[in-house]
Length: 270
Image (spheres, helix red, strand yellow):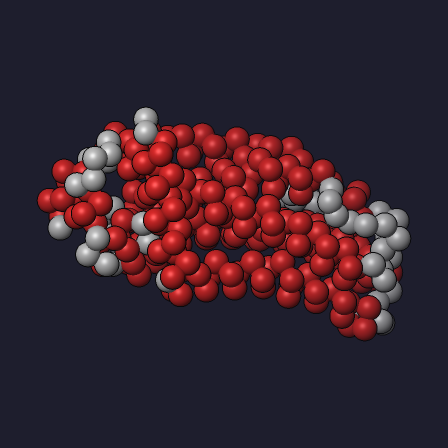
């Protein structure tokens, strides 16, 4: 495999991504909202819950699973609300970032080439199908992982600053989020990437590919709803299991995509 050709393809794709506002804006805006704006709202918890009492904490305890309830024992209502929100409720939302970043970039991968009238020239370059596919995939996977890890660091700082007046200790980093960032987030990025690769090579426009591929976020939404409903809560074991499932799905989709990816078919669709 010619890694110099793969690196050249990655540089070209990333340069195009940085020049496309339709791709850059979601990549920048979503992390800013999730990692700065939302955790910053915790600053308003004391004023918004100044009348909180033991009944408020009891209602919160009744809503969550027994495992999560144990994590909130001994905290004041304001502290319990901050821990519940910042540590546990935000955990599934964090996974939306690697999913969407890889999803958006991959959506622009082949469909964008077709819309920019550059796909034909790309397909006739002296690279194998495998090199072309790997280059396109890494162009989306690497930025998604970098944005996720940088976002985790940023979120940790903002969340600790926002909750400093409530907590006697720093909430971040913690083992649960370390597992999510290092194990689950790359797998989530792979899911967004592999699923979008299968869609983008067949879609006619960037919007079609993006709208279809964005459905992959639905499982993350279901995890969030399940935690709110008290059906489950994000702990280390759930994160490890979720990551394993995502990696298996990634491997299956990657194998299928590699078996079905042929530039001759792409040329025929031009």
